[in-house]
Length: 124
Image (cartoon, rainbow, N blue to C red; front, side, top):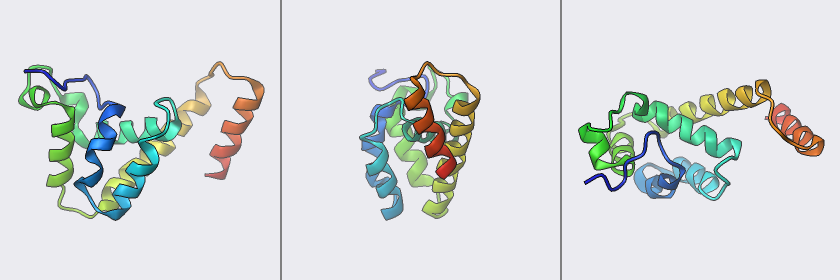
């Protein structure tokens, strides 16, 4: 009954929602789906989907949760009547938020890794 039930939008769902929207959406999904789960773009994508799908309000015994994250995300994406740019804006906002969070939160990185992250964020 609870075959695909996570607390928040899982990265494993990303490839399954590729064809639910147009070309720009598919380009984003194709870029993000192969990134490591701890990559800032993957984290931002999951955060965007958590916001877009309303995952924070999902209860484990709700109809949405019982159907699973993939079905819920597909339904939410298909029901959205606006352009793909609306959803891409949510992703871009989540990316900015995630980058800001990571700048403020110390990570255990080597100096070289930290410098690369800072340089990448400044360029974005």
